[in-house]
Image: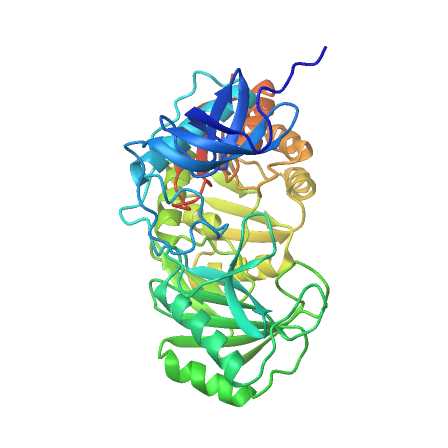
Length: 457
C-alpha cells in the first residue's frame, strides 16, 4: 500500500527548514515528506502554502517567515523575486560560500562514495558584485513596448529591467541605450512565438584589464534599420567601445548566435589579460565570465599540476587556450585539444600573442586525439580536464587512464558529474587527494571545483 502524502495542495502549514537544495530552495519535511520552497533558509520557521504535490516531494511558497535565519540578507536587486539569474541574494555571502562547500562535500559522498576527501573552504571574492564581463541580453516586446533583461526562472518570459547587479555598469548602460535606440529608430524586437521582428539579443563583453568594450547586435536577418545612426550613437555613448559587431541568426531556435558575424565598426576582437597572459576575444569566443576568480581557479589548477618545467601536459578541453597558456609558462610542453575549430584557431593566436611556443593545439575529440598522440610517442605526465556540465564521457576517462599520467587535475562546473567521474577514475587507479571549491558565480547556486588526483602504485 502506497504511503499517503501528508499535505494537500493549497493547504497552509507551519514548517522549519532544515537544508538547501542544489538549486537554492529551502527544504522542510512533514512526516519525512520533503517540501521545497524558494527563498527559504535553513533554521527558519515559516508559514507556507503548498502549491504542488508529487509522490515523493512537494513545492511550497513562503507566506510569512516567523523566525529568520541570522544569515538572511535583504536582496539589493529590484527584480530578484522574478528574475532567474540569481538564486542566493537573500543569503549572506559567507553563508553562500559555506553552502557551496557543504554541497560539494555531500554530493561527492552521495554520488561518488568519497567520504574522507578534504573539501576545502570555498574561495570567494572580496566584492561579490558586478563581476561578469559578458552579458547575453534577450530583447522582446510587451504591448508594443521594447523590453530587455533576463529570463524568469525556467521560462522564456523576459523580466524587463534597467540594472543587473552581477554584470558591469557598461552592460547596464548598453542594454538601456540599445532599448531606447530600438524604440527611436523603429527596430522591432524578435518574437520567438511568431518568428517576427528583428532584434533578438545584445551581447556585451567588457575586458576588465584594458577597459575595451564589445557590443554584438544579434538580429533575425541582415538589415538593421538606421544602421549608421545606431553606430554613431553607440560610439558617442561609449568612448571605450573597441568593437561593434553584427551577428545574424535567421533560425527558429533558442541558440543565441547564428553562423554569420560581421564587424560594423572597430576591431574584430578585444583584448584582456589574466595574470599577465593576454587573450584575444572575438564575439563567440568562450572566455570565463569572472576574470578575478578565473585567476584564482587556474592558479589552483597550476598548483595541483605540480609542474617543474620537465613535464608534458595534455589539456583535454582547451577552449581558446586559457588553462593551456597558464600551464605552458611552467611546463616543458602543453598539448591542447578542443572539438570547436574556431576555439583552436583562437588558442593558436593566443599562444602567439604571448610568445609561447611550447603549446600546440589540435581540433578533435580528446578521446580520439589522445590515442593518436600516444601512438606518436607523446607521453603525458599531467592531464588537465575542464569539461562542460555533463562531465567526461567514459571513453575519455578510459583514454586518460591509458595515458598513465602521474597526476590528473579535474576542473568542474558540476559537482554531480564530477562525483560520478571521480568514482570511475578511482576504480581505475586514480585516487582523489583534495578538492577546492571556487566561487566563480556569486549570488547564484553554481560552484566550480579544482580536484587533484594521483596515480596509485
